[in-house]
Length: 252
Length: 210
Image 1 (cartoon, chains in turn red, orange):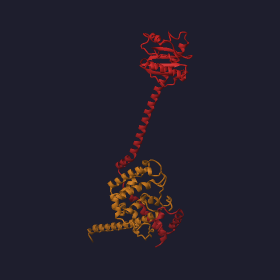
Image 2 (cartoon, chains in turn brown, yellow):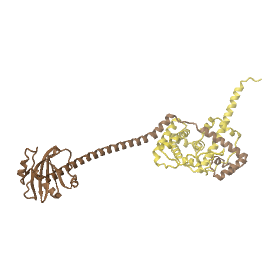
Image 3 (spheres, chains in turn brown, green):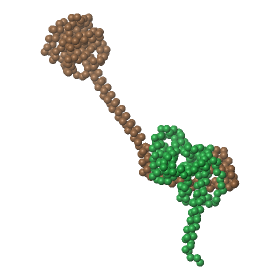
Image 4 (cartoon, helix red, strand yellow):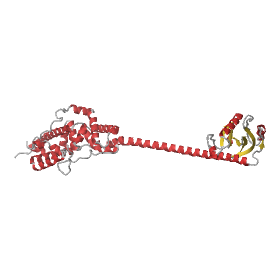
């Protein structure tokens, strides 16, 4: 057989799989060897025939669409759907948070206004030449004085064994609502006690809200027996708290 | 083995795509292979419905396993391997491979080329149907490697990855596949020629002799 060693590698050469240096050697040989050139031509013709004949079957458009849908639509749709769900949930959460923040903000502003107004009443009252309308250290005189002047009644504590003393009381108004304003004293500090009907006051009261720091007064507020109590003054927080406890026990 | 698929040489066949690093979604990578995978599947199964089932199953399996596919490796070889493995485990695939003896050609030396008869030079001119029939008559392991090399223009490395065999096995199996195809073509060509002569004889028999 002519060029046997070359021809064993002829297919590898025609498939382009020989190392580049061997390819060049093969190129040269094929160009000068009629036997190998004829053989190479025949094999190239065979390759071309197989390639042409091998491209035989074509999928239908419907089948292509079906497979495409099965691989493309599902994951993307689920990803998009998931994305939209997450986005919608996020928007909803943001809206709720925004509304809640707005609501809380409005509540806080409202409370600050109320506390500020109470502080003003406290200061204005103490600055007045006649801070109280009923001057009495006796709760049995003060409480009846409010009868017919305010639309509710309340209980006042017995102060005999405490360091607090009652200076008197007056009618006051908060948000166009009439209420009782009592002045107590502990040592040299005067403390205002405001009592209103809970239902007649606008908004919700946050009893933990630290408005007192802002106002430079100590303050405590609570609701008891449909009445809203607010104690405010420049006395120590403990004094404010002790007075609050006395009032609570009296009301309870 | 080198990768010298040079376009400038008339005897060289260029193929570089499929070995390049790929990136993209499964859909973007897999759908351009759809036609050729279907063609390959039809050649393996010899049946349209079975080919469609095979391709469908291949895409479903590949999509499921796409997370385990490493981008930058050969996606085409990966898809063909899935298709082929799916075929081999199908009833048609099992039937096809049971009738084939693989022991003769594995890792053997490349065949020495025999001298060819002049009629094989005419192969390019014979009709495509004749070549298709010859390919179709090949055992499945010859059919698939020939199609991967000539139709899909895969490199030996890609074929090795697709068929999960060594490059040496690719070369020897490919050599035997080509030899077998050539023999069948020559037989079919002779059959056609003798048929043609018989038809010619039948036709001319009725012509009045002078």
